[in-house]
Length: 254
Image 1: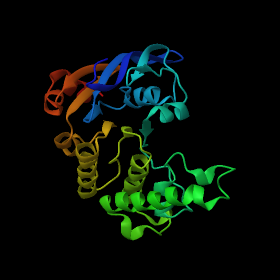
Image 2 (image 1 turned 135 degrees about the horizontal axis):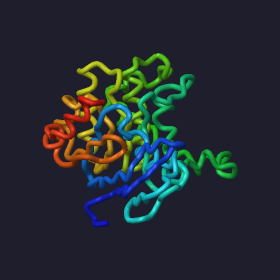
Image 3 (image 1 turned 90 degrees about the vertical axis):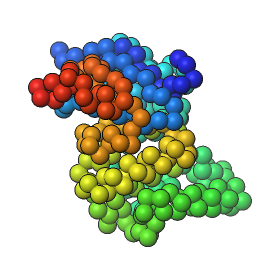
């Protein structure tokens, strides 16, 4: 691996009984960029993301993060290594407020330690800064006016933004996203990608994003991979990949 790549998935094979869901898929995610992963339904995109995130263990191949082999590590270990994940359907805590949902992903809170929690001096500064950082992210996602509302009071698009905010507050600079704009109106979808672009350009995040709404996502992405039948069939700039005849054929056949 060179220093230009944060993440590499190499020759990944994943079997589900007789189904070969991934058939030697390989991709490399450049540092401080937005990389799209596209392809028709059933092409293996989410399965590949789940292998990277540790949800599935590959039958063949390996996953490297910052040059370290993390193949087969469970999700919490992958998270500890520095990879955060959001989902197509937001996984929020409905009875908690928006701000509480946003800040709970931050690791290392001394207030959660059985010994330190009764000692206010051990956790006060940590939580004070955490709240400040939480409001900063909520302002960037335009959710700050809803900070004390329950997560269940949010619209579907606002829930997407809150989950993204929570992922970014986890301090993990590598982020995996599965259709962050699914079910969101076009105006809010553009707002989401503007926000993600800002996170990459200003705060140095690296993102691998599955997305079907290519007309909205492509202008904000740096690189793209296309999958079909468990394999990567094209890579390059989003425009190059979207205009690749093999990619167009895969969508027509899918």
